[in-house]
Length: 152
View 1: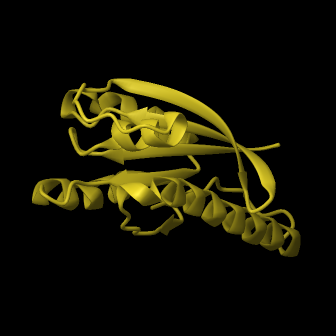
View 2: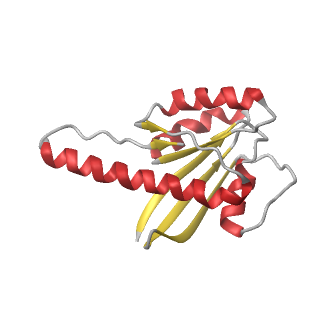
């Protein structure tokens, strides 16, 4: 079974935990409880392949920014979340993109009914990236290997 390390990032109060819990437990949490950092694992089937999603739900508050370095190093794919009624949270996405500074940045808008699609699309992108990376490494033996990831 293939494991995918996904990280959910965004400003405080935009719904990162609500989206993650919607995927993991199939129910929407509507009350706000600030997160420091929570980790979830879920086995799913995506396009006929059994996958293990290792999802890190991060703190959006600035006082926990010191924790970012660790999850920025270990994440393969990043789901950037913003609130449509909070312009600053949208502007913050650029900040997260600069911090991550990785291979691919993908923007995806979705409704609550498409929460699963957002996470699954990220997994599909990671798969494609892994295939391209392996193909490139086979063509260029002896190259220095750099860990890359995806940002949505």
